[in-house]
Length: 176
Image (cartoon, rainbow, N blue to C red; front, top):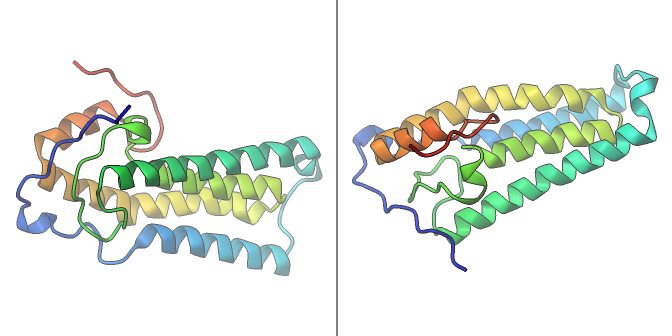
């Protein structure tokens, strides 16, 4: 069964050509991961012993696995839709199916879950702290700008999509 076809792009407005100058999300999440691992090695984290048990570690591994799965699902969905995946390049199509029907930023949400899950699995409080910080920075430096790009490029199609699907997490609203 083939996925539903998403609408082809319209002519972009001049300000819609590039969503970001730099690929902020991989830099932010990668930087958060590296900084947290270095801090964990240099200054063992503020991790209470109660939270370092096997159940928390196993739960963290599950959360990390969920994050990777969400990342891969979103990447495959974008690839099958024959659209750009790089966050500093313009979108070719507005993809609204698959994980994009649940969240407008499944890759960023997956990356956040990955950092959080690794932090729990490794009992590294620095990673747990890095996850929401990277998510906040990604929201401010990339996601909001990307949404302005999509709104300028896809107009009412993006407005209807944004009204229906949460930016990060939340309850998707049904079609009118």
